[in-house]
Image (cartoon, rainbow, N blue to C red):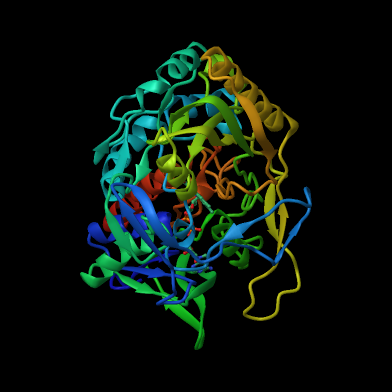
Length: 492
Ligand SMILES: Cc1cc2nc3c(=O)[nH]c(=O)nc-3n(C[C@H](O)[C@H](O)[C@H](O)COP(=O)(O)OP(=O)(O)OC[C@H]3O[C@@H](n4cnc5c(N)ncnc54)[C@H](O)[C@@H]3O)c2cc1C
């Protein structure tokens, strides 16, 4: 192995950008390989004090090369472009809470994370400043406060709702948002595209390399050295072999698993890291319902409200739901033109629920891809009945709270979306203390391939109801720093 070879990071989404940022900060030569084309038109966003006033975004497309096998309505989205899905996300960045890890543990040994909140805390603290977050500076049960660039508070008209929700074990607080208080004009469809905000400046400063239009096909394993020695990718000029010192997979939970499944060798007949047939399994996404409620009197729209999950004693292990209020440009404009500007009588919520991960929810390769083509995927993702019940129960709970608050609520829309609609995929290379239940260890490192880390939400052992990006970035930062340390001391 040549120390001069780069550590290759696959993917320029939030997870890859975070891993690359911390690897290069540790002094390692870092090369990011990104499938999307350089110079892709990513749209633009204009924001004034955190409010989006204009934006153009390219369409988000579902993967067409998948066969939904358990629920035919299931959809799978991806964005093969610099920044990945962070060119489409809503920028909500809640931390996981200590209870999220406790809940996984009470679900039984296979669901226990090998790390807890205190292991992630220093990494949340390092990643959050990169995200310019606006949100509450007060810890709430089930949502620890982060490092806020701009502190926010809910309007006082939410006070009674918050008091009533607290009696049921839920907190009502402002949702933390990346770039949530910034005035900015950026050439991407969201205020924080990971490539635009982190990688492009680091590349311009000469701190790391980025090679776009490089779709990684597989990793090359050396039987003699017992490590991955190169990455094979497809470029516009044909197949290319890039020797590497180590690899960090951060291509999104589905694509990272797909790359491992494609990396077959005599030592790894089912793909690197897949000796226990776990790669691709335990896939999860947040069961999602859309709820629009009409009220007898208006409530403040901004900052957007988050109703946390209930406390553990009020929920079954691994089942919970939280509410994320949405407010698009149209809702805000309508409210500004109304007689009570800033308030709305119609409130929209995404209710994000959880699902107990199972080995049957999975992605796997379908035979028949031509040379150099990406294999088609079999895609099995179905919501368990318990998850659907939790979403309905959460809706009823919110309606009762709003009723008790004298807001005369009426449901305008309640719709349970098809599996995969949240686009919060995780679990396909799960983290665990044992090889029996995990693909990676607590450092995100593949058990028997020590120079390979998986650093995106693929490693989530369970999928707590919180939006995943902040935690994926904290894990990626931690994985990058520990890989750097182990390369320095010869442990990787
Ligand atoms: C509409 C919408 C709203 C969302 N809102 C939120 C939110 O508010 N908060 C939140 O936490 N999450 C949100 N999400 C989810 C969030 O966007 C994803 O969880 C997150 O982007 C995943 O990050 P990632 O880096 O793991 O993967 P991705 O963002 O998918 O990035 C993966 C990157 O890898 C590249 N890649 C893939 N395959 C290969 C390959 N073979 N070779 C080389 N490169 C490859 C891709 O081109 C891409 O750039 C939202 C998603 C959507 C669609």
